[in-house]
Amino acid sequence: MRTFVIVGHKATTSPNFSLEDIPGTSGRLDILCRAVTAAFVISHGIRKDVLVYLVLLGGDAPKTILLHGESLRHLNPDERTTAALLKKALALPATDRWAMSTSGITVRLGGLPELLEDLKEADLMYLKEDGSDIKKMEGISPAGRTAFILGDHMGMTAEEEELIGRAGARTASLGPTSLHADHCIVILNWMLDTNVFIPE
Image (cartoon, rainbow, N blue to C red):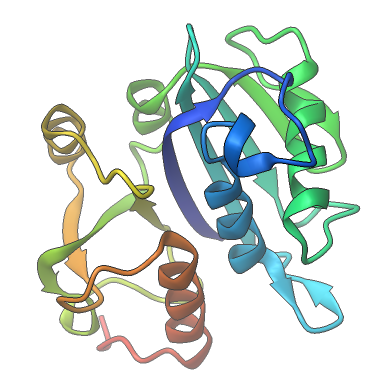
């Protein structure tokens, strides 16, 4: 499975935002919506072999939403539809156990530390401009267990980077130019589709 982790530092953990003004009322949940579209949506369908974790930190208690391509339904290539699906997930009473809101979407309490513990068997890859050239890194393949970690428009804090490093993540770069998270995901999907990585 292809796994993408996107951290939204201001993204709301409450369903009380307006679908008519997602950027202005949701803590820039629109950034995460675009990342979801980039991860899943292809012409006439969605990718089944993708997992997306959205880490929402813009509330009293962090929440994480998991989208699973194999069972995901009702996802369209527009931010409003995606935001509506996330809104349903956030309306559930969250606990430390995953709870399903709609097909392929689950939510629970917890932020980055809890998620990194869940992903301790994965090959963690933190995307950052000054990382190693991702094309030259070993162990990445379409059928692999790599989990790509991306920040939002605010980037990662020093504490988060330390946490990611302690979890064993390698730091990889798509180039020196700062890119939007959704653009990074499109590039990563293309790289995995065409298997441009060096052999293991």
